Length: 168
Ligand code: UDP
Ligand code: MG
Picture 1 (cartoon, rainbow, N blue to C red):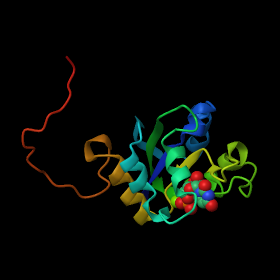
Picture 2: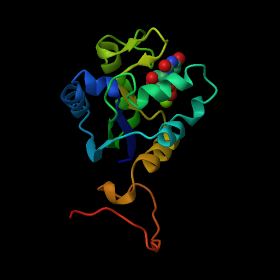
Picture 3: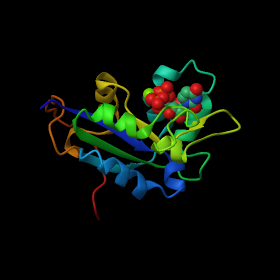
Picture 4: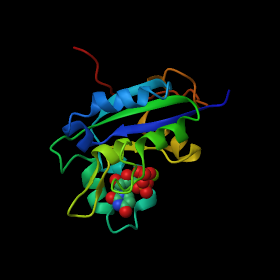
């Protein structure tokens, strides 16, 4: 068995259209395991780092605004890690093509995506493209304690007087 992990984001349009349940149901058909999940308010830095390969694209600025929820009045995304055999291929297939108009009509993007007048593909979910990208993205969005299996090697570091918020 050769398990792999994939980062899935339910983008702000997916949240605004109340598609969370629907998308999770579709993903559950894969029988992959959810090994991490959380809501995230996406900072400018996180958005830039996540999409850094697309920096030169004409739609980059709009893409950053889109993923940060500025077009949908939903300044958050849901981030999940799915894990199992052929996780990447199976999730990419369920998601459908990047361009929602070219995506198969039964796929998630084909069913619910659209192209905006700005030319941005609002395609409801993000799915990592390959193993290398998946590792980079998962490490960017999650820390080791947030994932219930050991996906990648870790190390212990001494935290020096770092402030953190706890329950009052
Ligand atoms: N995107 C876009 N126009 C394009 C290509 C991409 O608006 O011509 C957006 C779209 O939301 C896409 C994201 O940029 O999901 C990341 O692009 P990528 O090529 O990595 O596609 P993905 O891996 O998401 O299918
Ligand atoms: Mg991609």
